Length: 204
Ligand SMILES: O=P(O)(O)OP(=O)(O)OP(=O)(O)OC[C@H]1O[C@@H](n2cnc3c(O)ncnc32)[C@H](O)[C@@H]1O
Ligand SMILES: [Mg+2]
Image (cartoon, rainbow, N blue to C red; front, side):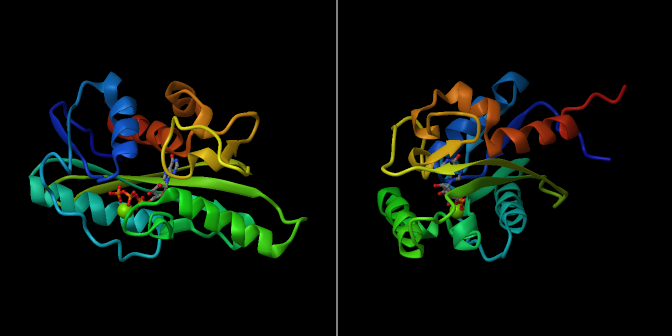
């Protein structure tokens, strides 16, 4: 049985502006009073776990303890089939400390080109969302969206690797997609749907 999230303040435990915006959009119908980790001046913890869920839990627990409030963290990434799942949990680190996703996308493409012309361009995004409370109770939900990598990058509406990811069944990239359409199908929306079913459930 999941714990119910009571109305009140909730920390979005991310230092990524694109994610904070998407999570705030997804939370908007639920009437929480959201504040980001950056606005509270919380430190960015080192992501030392070897899974999306492990890193999401670490970030949520750290923010909940520091703020004394429930905290929602997101650990996510792009997993490329032909690259054995890379960049995966290292998706942010491939962009380097200056968060240069142009360079990270070019690195993905370069590695695919090195494998050869017939290489599979299948990829998926994963998102683990963890909700933690100051008493260290934590709940984690995972989502996924499948798609194909395109080159060159297209669109400037999203963030991160969005300009090279075309979700299955669509002919535009996440970078070209309106936020509302991305929220209907994304890995983050998939994880979020599971989270809201669990923690905003009514007990009757
Ligand atoms: O850890 P926080 O502070 O939340 O921010 P971060 O950017 O470091 O986030 P992650 O550690 O989860 O790294 C995941 C990277 O994968 C990329 N990514 C995740 N979701 C994405 C999405 O919806 N569209 C494009 N790229 C995404 C994004 O660029 C992130 O930097
Ligand atoms: Mg991170």
